[in-house]
Image (cartoon, rainbow, N blue to C red; front, side, top):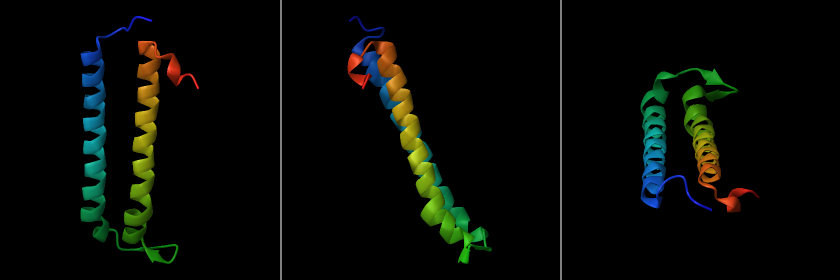
Length: 86
C-alpha cells in the first residue's frame, strides 16, 4: 500500500515526537526532584514530597509511554501499516 508521507518525513515526525516526550520526561524528573522538598506535609503517614518522588513521577512516566503508543498507533494507521491492527 502506498504511504501518505515519504519515509524520511515519517521518521522526522517520529523523532520530533520522541524529542518532545523526552523533554517532558526530563522536566518531570527535574521538577519533582527540585520542587518536592517544598511540599512538606504528611500524606498517608509519609511526607508528600517522598510520595511525589516515588509514585507521582512513575504515573507521569506511564502516561508518557501511553501517549507515545497512542500517537504512534494513530500515525501507523494513517500511513497504512496493517501490522498495527492486532
